[in-house]
Length: 97
Image (tube, rainbow, N blue to C red; front, top):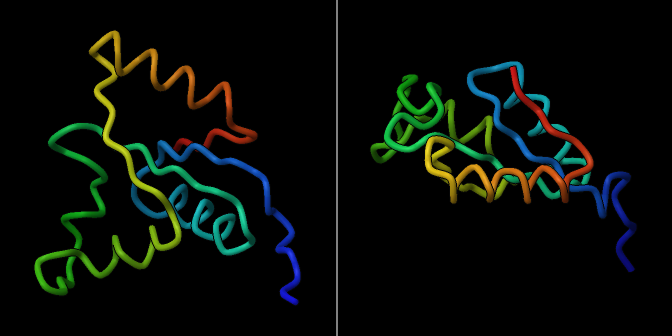
């Protein structure tokens, strides 16, 4: 029988980028929280451009965002803004930096 992790059942919406926010939400994911990483269209998280690259992807980005679900949302589109409101309404924590 596996033991539940301390944050099982918690939902985190992560709209952070580069280091502090992604590291925090990575720790929350490791403790069992559901973490939804939300990125901007085209640009995404600035960490995606940080070396060193592994098969075309930033190793830094992969490491900081493991255990998270990913989503791209255009907040300038009313549908994207509505989706973000629904996500944050369903979340226990919203992370941004």
